[in-house]
Image 1 (cartoon, rainbow, N blue to C red):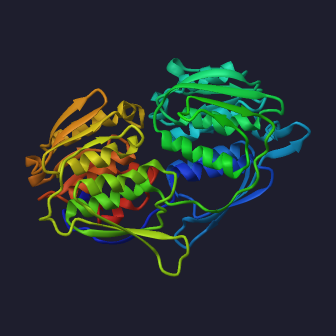
Image 2 (image 1 turned 180 degrees about the vertical axis):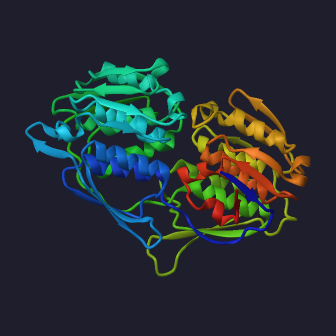
Image 3 (image 1 turned 90 degrees about the vertical axis):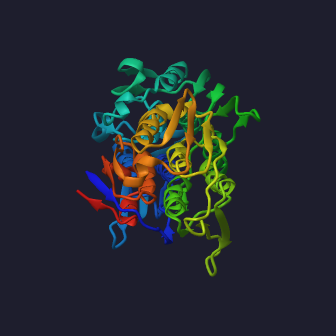
Length: 451
């Protein structure tokens, strides 16, 4: 699908959709719990639907209560756990789920977290996914699971198709984590190993540390015991836990919020983003500190009459106000690379986006892809092994719009769409349907025309 973005000022109020990271973690925990969970206002996207299908294939019973828009108002999840003398027992031996292939679609988070969960049971679980997932390696995680007792088979370089079978025997594993999802997977699964089984995880390399804070916050809420080094280089997790049901609203997504904010900044408008919590564990909340450094007005306030709810207003105060370049370390926030690159194209001076080599192993090689697409628009951009250097201001190619390719990557598509608001002519984006992976409706929000 192609989307056509016409330059204009973007302003208004936007309710931010639920966090993909929170939605998937909550859904997996609820599916593993002993009892019934109620998840309110979860993310309605391709990735979350993939996770929903995987959880159902593992045996969870899930009922969807929908709003008039078709989006889920609530997921009611009957977990697969049963209690025994030794703790968690994976109810995965039923004939109905034994031979089911777990298709994660485009969701790397679902793949990595569910691989570790599959190692808890003795039934072999086969995983597959789309073309992009077929290029995303789980080799480090699979090696760790093998060290902990699982039997694993995969295609070359640890990519799908992958089959995992437990039981989880514990012990010590050593794992480098260019993506934090490897470690989150082990942390979520290890407590559910049999009582008396202890898992020690040594982590010589870890990117995206805020996502580990998020995962640990769920273990804390469950009352799960664990020990950790302050720098997250080592964890010790005893088995024997059983997850309790969880209830409540899924937090809004800071990663998604960056895109309507960028649209307002590039178009010279003002937007109020609703539903975000400035105290959330999501690392991408740092986006608002970054744009403030670039000269953008950022104002948080608690919403009247809605205890615990917040909104943030982002304003460039008119297109005449300058946007300033800067140097940004994106190691903890790799998902911000595309949107920060889009903003850098309009900033005065040279912007350095660095320490984010792991952006190359996302849905696409986002460093190479953004350099390529910015180049099509006349933006001076130099690719580094671990980032980008972008000279912004008045990109000559942007003066007449043009045509770009989203490469099947939702964050690339949305970043390019935001850039289209600052062009003098229409911008055509190929592969625009990828935006639905995490933010259905975003292109409609910008008034895109579809071809």
